[in-house]
Every structure is written in structure tokens, then in C-alpha cells.
Image (cartoon, rainbow, N blue to C red):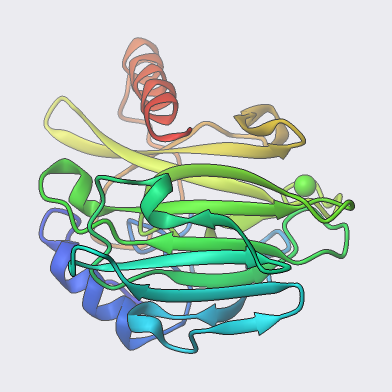
Length: 250
Ligand SMILES: [Ca+2]
């Protein structure tokens, strides 16, 4: 979906647009870091929406998995729970006790690791104020062959299944994760490649040429790395991006 809002004022409108559509093209600056007028140069993740904000389609059941949302005990916001064979393996309130989750969560099935097993992607708008209000919390539950799930969580602006592409064609998806930073009088998006490993997520820009990719924040499609930065400015933004990832990935 095209984003008509700026990031700064986009919080409220983001909520509305997400509610209005399940379309996914959720790159935060409205355009992915490849040419916007051509098909994506890498395989993109096929994600099946199984629960929507405001408890749409909830409860969802596909044995042994059951996903349900319910009002939180304090009456504010909704909690989303994942049960496997009747046992609760994850819930958003325990995982993120300070988040509000007014809308509940959007939940998707997708095979992130190419092993034929459906992994669970949970996106929740925290409803907090301040800097964090622009970001959604993502919880990945990656299903292992033995039926257990590996959990990873991070935050991203306009987090969405569209952030996953298979950059090296091995059937295992990588995530393009981005955040914006100020340098001089301008804002820049720094795109990083995040690899899914058996031990969790990790930055691995070596998987894709031209990454980390720094793109000037413009109001039009732009996939070209900026030429405006000196080497030391570029390195500073990449260091900030690494620190940011370490902050939001748990
Ligand atoms: Ca891959």
C-alpha cells in the first residue's frame, strides 16, 4: 500500500491503514530498497493472515496450533495467546508486559526457514507514546522439526511479512530491517540484512551486495544508496543502526 504520511505523523494513520488492508508492502519509507516499479529481485515471503487486529478470525485453529485473543485482565488492550496441543507456549502480555496492544495482534503463517513447517509471525502495535510509538513489535515463533518453537522478538517501523526476502536463494528467508537516523540536516534509512539462524536472528550484511544500504529519506521512490555522506558519516550511521538493532532485538 502506498503510504501518504510521513513517519513523524504516521502513528495514528499507520494504525488505520493496517486495519483497512492486509496488503503488505510495508517498507517504512513507503518503498523497498529495490526499484519500486519492478518485481522484487528476490523471492518474497508468502504469508497467510490467520488472525487480524481487533480479533478478526480469532480464535484460529489448525491442530496442534490454536491462537486466540482476549481482552487483557486490566480491561486495556488485548492479549494474543498461542497454544500447542492445549499448552500455552506464548502470549503477548507475558512477553511484553509494558505494551498496551489496543488492537491485539496481526498473526501470519509463513515458512521462514524453507523446511516446509509453518512458522508463526505475530505483529503487535504497542500503543505506547514517544519514540517507540512508531514501531510495531514482532514476535517470530519458528517451528522446529520436533514440534517445539524458537522465539525471537524485535521492533521495526511498519514491521510486516513483506520485510522478508530470500536474498541468496537457499529457501531460507532473510529480513531487511531498517531504521532512520539524522546526519547533517537530513534523514537517512539504513537497511540491514538480518539472517535467521538456529540460535536466533543476527545481522549479516555480507549476504547481500551493497548492504548495509543507506538511502536518503526522500518523498519519492528511491532505492539508490546515497552519495551525500562521507565515509566517516556512513560508518557512524551504521554503528547507530547496529546499536539500534541490539536495543530492539531480544
Ligand atoms: Ca536465504
